Image 1 (cartoon, rainbow, N blue to C red):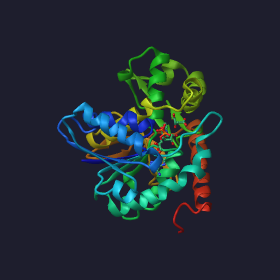
Image 2: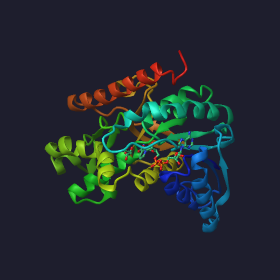
Image 3: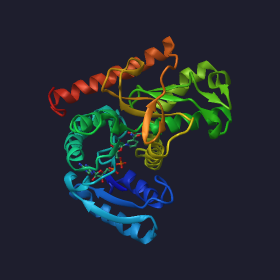
Image 4: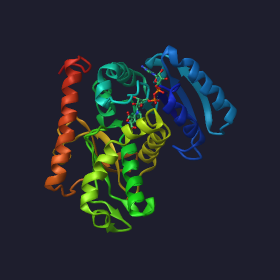
Length: 325
Ligand SMILES: NC(=O)C1=CN([C@@H]2O[C@H](COP(=O)(O)OP(=O)(O)OC[C@H]3O[C@@H](n4cnc5c(N)ncnc54)[C@H](O)[C@@H]3O)[C@@H](O)[C@H]2O)C=CC1
Ligand SMILES: O=C([O-])CC(=O)C(=O)O
């Protein structure tokens, strides 16, 4: 299994590499070849991480190579974790990074198209993640669109963690939360179908909180971390990326999670937008959980986040970051 991590010399890269090499993603029997893709300024940090990977003597780590071009970095990749890009700082929204980061993802999408393994699976972490994933996907016409995903697992995990804390419940007793839409402040953490030990979550925590302060807290958790830590989330982001890829390969059984993937039109989300939806995974593929009842409150929230994704798509089209047509 060849795993390419872009931005491997950065913070999230550093938090993710050791867990991938330890077997946390593909299990205890799957050797992993790591490919670290960096820009010249990040190469020294990636080299340092590579030295430390050697020093861990991970039995599953077959090789570590550093690349500075996407063509070499993605050659033969089965999994591509697109982390490399600038994080936001206090006072910015993630969408403010579009102009700074968007240009990274076209050439990477093209290189994935031309050089990655036929079964490549892509997870975009770099912000604004949904629209960067859209840009990459649009440059990779030969790769099935559904192999391009963006990370909303961190939002999902936050939604689970904060609900468990409020209800005094065990994380393992919570299921059925959905993050809808964009990985941004417009995202909608939806408790309508969530349960805590089999009881409707909104009955346990009350609608006023569950459809009020809770939504805001989850949606703005990234900004809260930036304010309290002085930098954007790192270990929790790497952890979420690992959860995402692990579940994609190993499946989720009956449990549900959230992934941003190209819309097939389900839940009225325009086709092709990379929007977060409820999913399960089986046989190496995400399956959208269809048929959930969407009430007027949820409809409005989902539509607002989808509108933001449409506007980001318009912006990157106007910037010439996606191929015409
Ligand atoms: N989707 C999510 O849930 C989350 C996304 N993020 C995003 O992840 C991204 C990375 O965050 P950090 O690791 O904290 O940032 P960082 O600044 O520590 O690391 C970024 C790394 O990317 C490298 N890089 C920049 N351009 C590159 C390119 N074209 N190819 C390869 N590498 C490149 C840089 O040299 C740097 O080493 C940011 O955009 C951040 O906003 C962060 C947390 C959660
Ligand atoms: O908030 C940020 O800029 C980093 C991020 O995406 C998150 O923590 O969810």
